[in-house]
Image (cartoon, rainbow, N blue to C red; front, side):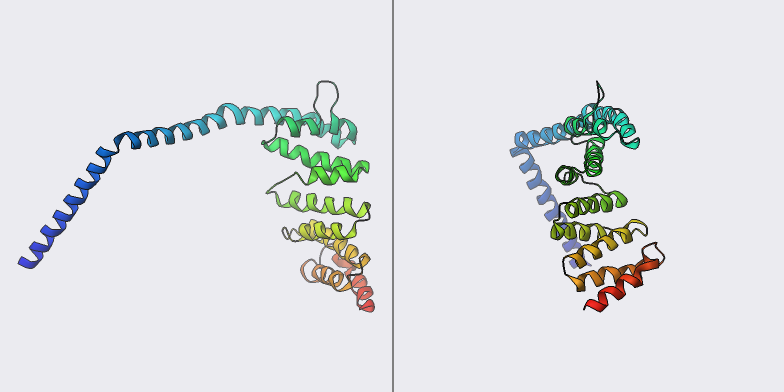
Length: 227
């Protein structure tokens, strides 16, 4: 028992010495520590103020601005949707004026799709490449739309690259088989028959019940006859 008592006293002495050293450290560095703490509070406070008093109002304003452009997009008034009309902004100005907001980012998507519909394929590629999203459907469509634009420009290799990005983004049962078929056709056109077969077989194995899956055996048979 005496040995345990001595051990407890030793531990207590060590702890006391550690506390003393810690107190001395804080005492010696009081000014530096205070500056660091103030700086941390300033950074956190500044960030909260930025979000609440700058970013959130900009987001709300951008959401209001994009409404008219979305309406023009829905009724196929694509030039107005892209460039705006009167005092109403189009997607290009919204993307530029409200960069960093969700609405500003979404404006890039709408502008890119609008350019694609208008046949301005290089603009479509440029703008859609600036669009980033966590939405699983828009991820697929935006990459696939860039693939479509490259196909229209007869740049099959680049089209296949983006179709591949589209079909490997997620496994949505509706939109992924649509672009898998396009990827397979692009690969076939590029003479990459083995790759085309892989795309078609993925439709058969993973999306057999999709519209593309109902007719996929015809594509598989055609490619297998070439290999």
